[in-house]
Length: 151
Image (cartoon, rainbow, N blue to C red; front, side, top):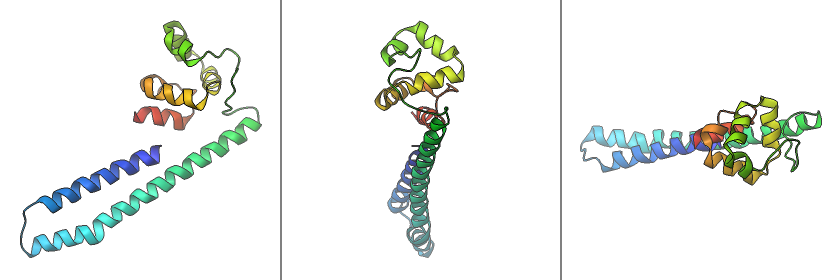
């Protein structure tokens, strides 16, 4: 999502600047030259960058998933299991301030195990509801933390 987020920022900026350039009342050769350069060179370069950022983001996610799979096979990494030892459901973990404090104060390994015990939907829900908490847990996978920090 980080690549998509950056691409979206660039795309919105290009759109905003294009709207301003088209909307401004500016006549003469300088205006025509400037607007022509924007339309022919600058805007297409920004849109090419947007495409590259999206592709890079997809590749980054793919690489991270492969790394998680490889690490899981070696006994570490991210494996999402329904019943990891000591794991609570998101409602229990987030609804009970003592449990939330326990997760915040837990070791990165314990945080990783807890996170791995959640379903993908539960993780996305927690990222949306508690981005400030999830984004600051060292045991959460980097891409999930980055997603939380973008919310």
